[in-house]
Image 1 (cartoon, one colour):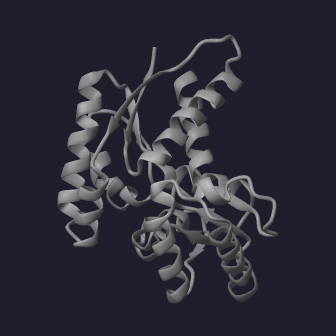
Image 2 (cartoon, rainbow, N blue to C red):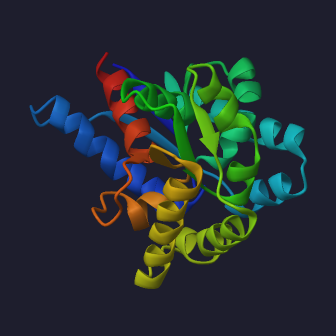
Length: 231
């Protein structure tokens, strides 16, 4: 039996979403009442974000790699990072990992490619929106990734860290995020919008209020994990 390891706690609310969604997706694919084998390693969110904010990426990589190794030692046969931001060092972690890792970014890129998109927008933390890991991975499939304008990024990051990570979902925040998405569609010509942070699924995932198609990275990542458990 395969066992999925999850590096969670980044943040706690999204880890709960991941666990429930993987169970639901697994049971939809295998409706015999069985459940998957999953190990969750919940880490210190503030320590990781502090290192990222300071630009100490080598330490971020070492920190997360140690947590992946703990999962492997506990019996995980493959693993994932239950957040978008730590994928900033995904390649470094993957190189040192004793078990295969499922990339949220690669899974989302594959979904965008399957839909035929050539230009997509990106919501996430400031670290995610300003880093190059989404554009670099998507460029391999000929897809351009556009981040919001600077003031829009500031708003998204503030609401992400001060509301969504804490599980706070406000209608006015949802409305403003949808407005930014509409502006990007008109201004930047994006064909789809990546919800590149797992907490964004809590506020925008499944919404029908925006005219632009959403690429919910969490849902896409979860589906790939469930499929891998059954492969």
